[in-house]
Image (tube, rainbow, N blue to C red):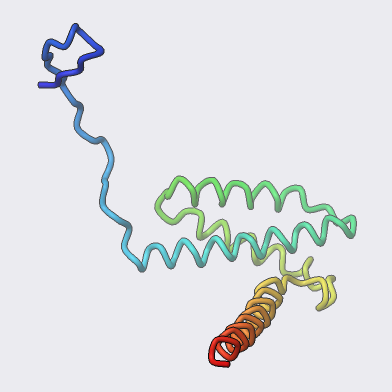
Length: 135
């Protein structure tokens, strides 16, 4: 029974709530790690395809397969997308050999370098702040 002064002149009324139609429990850590691994793999393949596309290589069919794998991954359909990714990585690897080493994806190394530099800078500023407070 619910009472709302703004509805039905403040008289109580009955409301029937529907039960949840989906699982409300958290995904296990192993499954989350698996999704994270395949998401990063999809990002790597997408980056390679964009690099190949900028070099005027026809990658239309590979992009379609990548989109299909990403859609199936988002839906969580059993593991069918894993086979699509394997086939896609086999098909894109001969094309990606055309890229030189500088064009491959290295964003994680750049980010790690930036983070460590900022951390070091913050530690120095913190030390200087404490030195000012002591004197």
